[in-house]
Length: 213
Image (tube, rainbow, N blue to C red; front, side, top):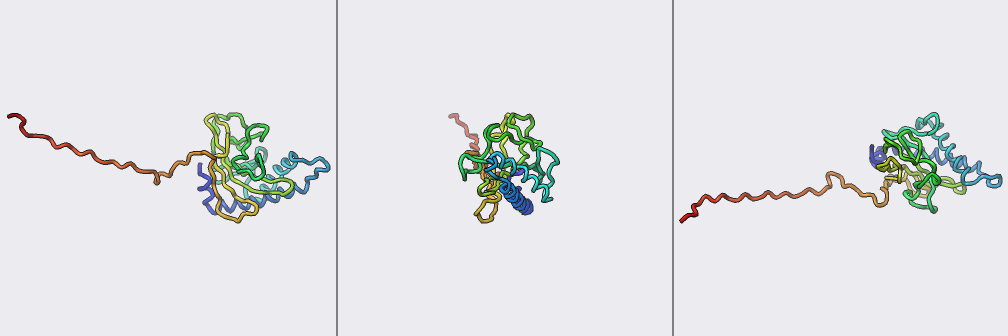
């Protein structure tokens, strides 16, 4: 399993992610075209349209090979990537606040097959990523992040372990900024770890003198 920073340091990988953003933006435009509140369209139907259209656009692009049936995912280096629209508690919330908390919030979370299930899964691994996109029917696509879910000791997915912004509306294109989960301990790189200073113990000189008088 590679860290997101290592994955995206590869120029070809980053270029692919940015091309996929274009597909996602087109899917949001498609969903907005079909969004008509006057005949019953709402946030739920918009979300369903986005999900369907995103996978259609990704498959039609030929950039990645998408599975032929649900759960949909595609291979990316050594990882498997699912794609989902996520929402937060408030507009503009940090991506780490946009992880679903229960089945009502988002009826799925990632297991090794790329499917989603919040219940503990034996053998769940961390080689699944989520291309998490945010947007709405009024403004379209707002941002896209590549996120790695954190699997706890029980096999449940509990938060984004790390997230990298791939595209953000109004922001200049730059190298992806990878952010760990709030409060996550940062392990120092091996070469940066302080090395203990060992001072050899001085040997006491053996007393060979005669103490008798």
